[in-house]
Image 1: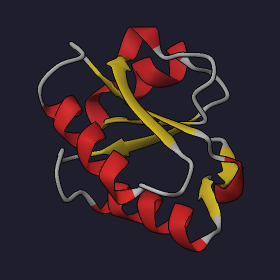
Image 2 (image 1 turned 180 degrees about the vertical axis):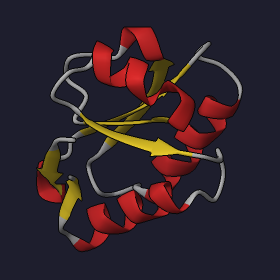
Image 3 (image 1 turned 90 degrees about the horizontal axis):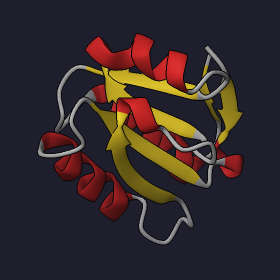
Length: 102
């Protein structure tokens, strides 16, 4: 797994299987939590992760596909779409500073 300093994160991508539904809710939630930090949050299908993504949040079942589609990017797998500890840790690290990943 790669890592990135929180101050270098400019774009988080929520990657899902179809690009709709739960990932949209998660993207909206994370976007609100990071308001004012300068971090862009978007959702996209797991097979279309943009090159400018710094961190990819994806369901654990899609993590291997996300890594294959975005080699070298920090992939954060989660289990549940709302309230997952991995997402909470990412948001807290961005707000307080530190390293994300590895």
